[in-house]
Structures are given as structure tokens and as C-alpha cells.
Image 1: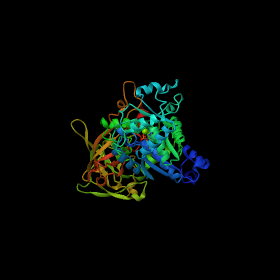
Image 2 (image 1 turned 90 degrees about the horizontal axis):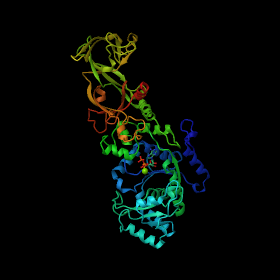
Image 3 (image 1 turned 135 degrees about the vertical axis):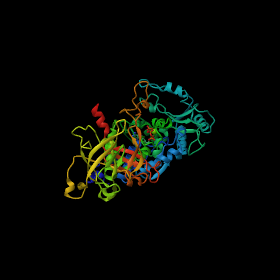
Image 4 (image 1 turned 120 degrees about the vertical axis):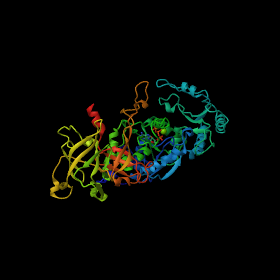
Length: 567
Ligand code: ATP
Ligand code: MG
């Protein structure tokens, strides 16, 4: 077994789970001759988010590292919140992230086996039908400092339990009137062992089993047994299940079935981000965003639409490692992973988001020059393209300043600047409208200074700006996305407020930009850099042939750090 850590090319450091896995395979009798088997077990009650990506990378990563297998298993035991739409989106997202499961399973496939195992527990005196209501059950459960009380139904005979459980399953009783509970220890300091519920009555239609069942297994009863059925060697889950582990172990031991090892790690939390599926669903249903795939959502489908790459999400998960304690990762780490990957892969283009007209007074009226522009200085294989240059151009409004400080090296009255790939121009006259807004800059150009045309072109000016030719430029809708929440910890809202009060009212701005002609032809889904501005993706849904709509993926540099520094 070779590990990537032994490969000098790799930057991977073994995480604590890998170390545990290696120890288990070296020492455990039950694992001899086996390879690792993991699973990713989403409940299909929402779309996957970046936290799930962490779990996916970990589970599929372990299987890959150690030459084993990883299943995709839908934990579909709560029909009231689950649907086929979620099942489909989850499969698409896992594939898009770059992973392929070895087996596709559903916990609902195991309903009969789970029922049979429940009968085994009853027969062996380890489970009973309880008639306490939910409220009574809470009263009997005890507190952190006081043990619980035994249910008055705890000592029912095996025959009575068998009869009642069968009738529960047959639909004879109303919802909420009875449960099946494991008989463990109402005095245990661990609440999970105080006779946990295994089955509740629910007259719900299930998206796969239809109306076959009216009793549904609880998470704890279904999860570990599903792991056992699939021969999962390591059941990786998040820290809040640590104190469920004794119950997980109790079920496997009491049923005398294959016993996977549960290992817990810290769930991923990101600053400025809400991660709970319940809250993400609320954002969608209350229309604070435009859907699960809104480019501002931390969902995989939102990131995909925004233009994040699967590579950058995987790199991010690798960078942050696997933690044993809960913490918050700065969302900048994710944004930087996206920048790093796009810097290497995205072609550069010119686009003007807030245009001001420039007229070159000494340039021939009808002349158009085809300049040669490099697509990606980081990637010679990306080649070059033709960039038309003419008498009338657009530049960014912010690249001109009338009363500029001496350190301003872009365009100012009487000052010079280089136009990228083209000439040095000088601002001769500023034209304003009646309100005083600059509407045109009359400039002269120096024909001797064409970029790349030899030593005479090497006259130096301090600034270079980008531009688009007015006669050949196209207009395009550009959506500037920013963080959806203003607060670093949006879920911690002050009293009488909710996470919704932390929403950034300016998380989306729509502009109409002038883009160079080559950009108008790019295909939906293509990611590009707008020079000197940021990375953008042609929206997969709203782009039309010849008329892309652009989503800003991420700015070139972090602008939030600057804002924070000013405060
Ligand atoms: P949420 O709390 O967002 O609703 P969940 O845990 O209920 O998430 P599941 O569909 O049950 O969602 O999760 C599937 C798997 O993904 C589980 O193994 C879970 O531990 C893991 N997972 C969920 N959220 C995170 C996270 N933030 N970081 C790491 N792993 C996560
Ligand atoms: Mg869950």
C-alpha cells in the first residue's frame, strides 16, 4: 500500500483519519484481507453545499488513496422532507466534483432488513413498543444531571411487543401514538442510550417505497445498520455524532453483525456563509435568492453556475485538511483557491464595465488595426487572438481622473497612458455634459509607440489601461456578485433578529458592459478573466448565442481586506 505522502511530488500530509485507517488495517483481525470501504450518505432533503464537498472529498479520497471503494448512499428515512429532485441534484453534483461512486444505494432498500432486525431485538428482549406520547417521553428522559425514568411499557412481554409492532407496521395505530424503542439504560449519562426510539409511525408517501411503509426508522437505527450491510470499514461522520457512537456500537454488537468503525471529524464552517440545509432552503423558499443554484449560494450548484471549478473546490478541501475540533475557515481561503486555478486556466479578455468614450483626434477616421493579444500569459498553449483597434474607444471611467494626485498613473488631463497591446495616448481635452459628468475624452495617440513594434515603441509611461474599440465592441449583461452575508458569522444574529437580517442588500449588481468582439462568441459555461478586473463565467442558463451574460466569479484581488483595513 503506497500512500501519496510517500510520493515526493505530492504535497499531501496524512490527516488523522488516514493515520487511524492505516493502524486499523495493520492491527485489526477483522480487516485482514479487506480494503477500505467508505460511503457518502446524504439525506435527499436539499442540495449539496460546500460542507458536503468536504465530506465527499474525504470519503472518496480515502477510497482512492487506499485502493478501496466508496458508495453513494441516500439516507432516505424521513419521507416528509425528501424528494427525487434532491436525489438527482446530489448525483449530478458528486459527479461534477469529479467523483464516481462504486455503488449507488438507498437506506430505503434496507427497510425490510431493518424491520427484521427490529424483530430480532424484540425477540431477544432488547426492544419494546412504547405508548408514551412525545411530550411524556421528554418528561421521562431526565436531564443532564438526573437519570431518566423507565417507561411504564418497558416490561411488556415479547409476545405483546411482537403483536403491537406488527400492528404498528400494518397501519392500525395513529401517528404519534406508539414507538418502538431499544431497551438500553434510562440511567445512562449518555442521552442517546436512554431507550432511543427506533421506529415512529408516519403516514407519509416515500419517494421510492411509496405507501409500502407507515413506520419509518430513525436516523440512528438506519445509519449504522446500513453501513454494516454495505461492509463499510470506516464510517466517517461529523463531530455531533461522537456521542451517538456508543449507540452505533451497541446496535452492531447486540445484533451480532459486521461492525464498522465510526470516526468523527469537524464539520466545515465558512465565514460569511450559512451552511445549514434548513436555512438554505429558507433562503430559496422565501426568495432571498433566485434558487438553489443562485450564484451567491454556497451550494455546489450555485458555485458551478457562478463559475467555480471542481478543481478549485477539491484543492480548497485539501488545503484546509481534516480537523478534530470545530472552527471557522475564512471564506478567503476558498476564494483564493478559485483565483489560483483560474489564473492558470482562464483566458484574458478586455471588457469595460463603466465606459467613458475616448476619441483619438489624430487617428484616421475609417482605419481599423487588428492587434495581436496574448490569451493567457500563464499558459502559452492558450495562444493569441486579434483585437480590433480604431479611432473611437471605451475605457473604464475610473481610469480617468480630472484632478488626479501625483501617484495616479492612469489617464489625466495633459497626461499619458499606454493602451494595452496598442499605443501611448495623451489626454488633450475633457468634454462634459450639462451636469458636469465626463462624457468624452479627446486624446492624441503617438503612432511610434505601437506595442511590440521595436525599440522606438519602448518609450515608457507609468500606467497601462485596457480598452475596447467602440465600432466593434458588443454590449453584454454583467452580474457582479458579492458575499450574500455582511456578517462574518451570519448564523449568530443578535436577539430578536435572525440570520436573514445579516443579508447583504448589495450582493448582486447588474451592469451593461462593452466587451471585445471575441468575448461575444464564447460558449456558455466558459470562464474568462476580464483584464484588470476579475474572473467571469458566461452564465449557463441565461446566455444566448452571440450574447453571453456574465457572472462575476471572483475579483482579481481580495477587495474585502481593503474594506476591513479602512475601518
Ligand atoms: P446540514 O446540517 O447542512 O443539514 P446534514 O449533516 O444534515 O447537513 P446530510 O445530508 O445528512 O446533511 O450530510 C451528508 C454527509 O455530509 C454527512 O456525513 C455529514 O456529516 C456531511 N456533512 C454535512 N455538512 C457538513 C459540513 N458542514 N462539513 C463536513 N461534512 C458535512
Ligand atoms: Mg443529516
